[in-house]
Image (cartoon, rainbow, N blue to C red; front, side, top):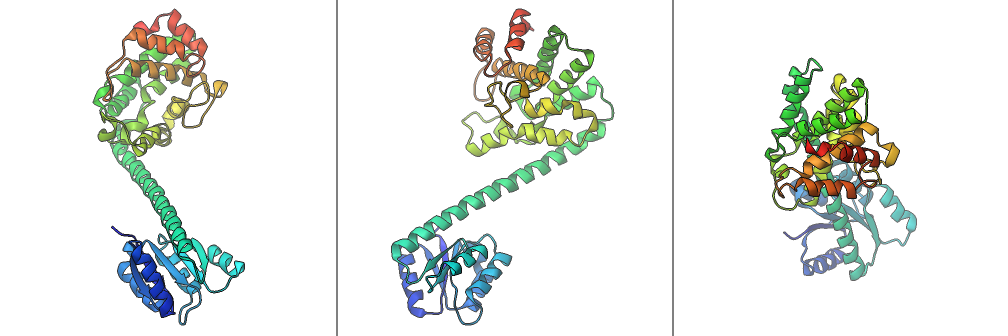
Length: 341
C-alpha cells in the first residue's frame, strides 16, 4: 500500500504544491488547512498515517500544540515540522518537542522528498524494533504460562525432578530427544575425570540437565525448521540462555545452575553469546558443559542436518581447542575417551 502522508498548512497554495509533489511520488495524501481538521483526520484514520507534515504557524491550534496532541495520542506517527523562519532555534525547539525533523519554507522538492523518505524509513525501523520487543514480551509471558504447571511439581532438588524438567524441555524438539541427558552424562564424566568435588559434580549435573531450559518458550516451528532460519528466528534462538536465566530466577533451588544456563554458548576466544565472555571469565563448570553440549549437538540428528560421525566430531573438538573450548578439558575428553560414552 502507498504510504499515507497528512499535510497541514493554512496556505492553500502550499497545500496544493505539497499534494502535487507527493501524489506524483506515489504517496497517498490527505491535506488539512488547520489543526482542527488534522485532529479529525487523526481520529478517523490515525492507524493508516505514516507521516504528518505540520506547519508551525497556523490560526487556531499551532503546530507545536498539534505536535503535543500527536505525541500524546498518536506517538507512533512521525512528524516533520514546516516553518517559514530560517531559525535554528525554532527547528531545535521542534526536535526537542518530539518532531522527527523540520524543514524551512519554501522547501525544495528534492529536500522534501529526501526528508520524507528518511523519516518514514526510520519510523519503520523503530516500529519493527518495537514489534520485536513486543514479541519478546509475549514470548516471555508464554514461557511463564508454560512453566507455571511445571513449577507445582518442583518441591525437591532430586535428580528425578531435574530429569523430569529436562524432559519437558526436550518435548519441544523431537530432534534433540535425550540431548540434555547425554550432555549431563558427558559433563559428569568430564567432571569426575577432572576430580571435581561431589558438590561441583551435583551443580554440573543439574546445570547440564537444565542448560537449554530457555528453549521451552520457543515455538516448534522454529526449533524444528529444516530450512535456513531468518534473522529474527536466529535472534529468538540466541535469546534462550537469557530466557533460561530469567526462568530459574523464580526457583531458589536452581540458582547454582545459573552460570551454566546463561553462559553455555560462550567461547574461549570471546566470540560467543550472550555476553562475549573470554577465557577465565567463563566459569570452569560452564566450559565443561559447553564442550559436552557441542559434541552431542554435532553427533545428533537435527532438523537441518544429519548427525556427524563421532570421529569427525572429535576432530572438530580438537580443531576448536583454545578458540571455542578449554584446552585442558579437551585434553581430558580425548585422553579418557569420554566421546565413547
